[in-house]
Image 1 (cartoon, rainbow, N blue to C red):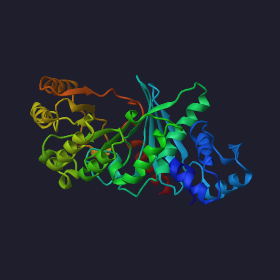
Image 2: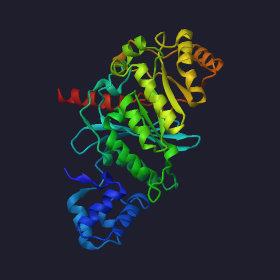
Image 3: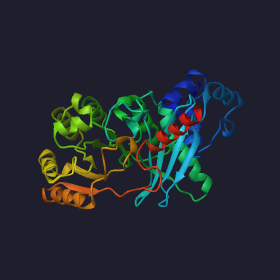
Image 4: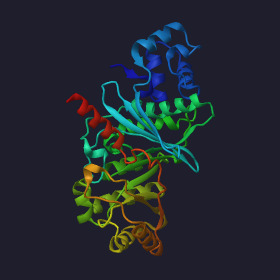
Length: 356
């Protein structure tokens, strides 16, 4: 398979062009075509010499993604199932938020983290996505928006789809460099959020880069016993190591950290867990923010159910009374395959039935 043109940061693209005997300014020209004019083929790059167009066509593919399924919910949330060039499948989600259009991208094919409530982890990691395959998710969504002719633009990105972003660290960092480049898509660093299940060593490496990108932690439990039961990653990176890394990140960047907390009925939603969470986060003062997430049930994880509205409200009140800023996440796309990884999982089941 050819590499995708989206695999390059602008610096990498310019260096490749210079190695090919081209002038440096050709890098910016190609960058404009890709990320300002949103072209879908090299032949559309009309100010490039024909030999360069031929060279690009010979060496690189354009988008490595093929849309298989597109689901749109009543709230306009749109879920895409894409097929990669090797036949594997990934999901991407477009959400219409109060502050603009946000895309949730996938960083790996499958996931090895082993969260016992998550649809994404039903299929083990098959491989990392390249930076270009992650960038292409944004561009496919943007191309679809362009086709609708409303002038809508992707302005926010969350790396919270299938996979653990910090397990694919270099490709995710290159992806961020591409989409936040001010001469291209120009998605502001503070409009980008990366979510990790808690790879403490990579949180520190992320802090050292000081990219001004938001960090979210998939926490989901306030003590080691419970977190190790529902999130296997906690056996490698228990809360002590995780919070050592979080404190390092805060000391280095002075940036707020969002803690994702999925509400599982009669598992992690009691007042006792809420009080433990207050104790855990209070040392972070005003730099901790909690997102309480109503659970989207997954049939393969039948042991879990969504917490009641009463339990969520009680948990929320306990956090607020303890001085912890929090919000109950507004739900999106509840009338389609809502859980992350669910659309892909359902499509794979259909294909397996047909194969039989």
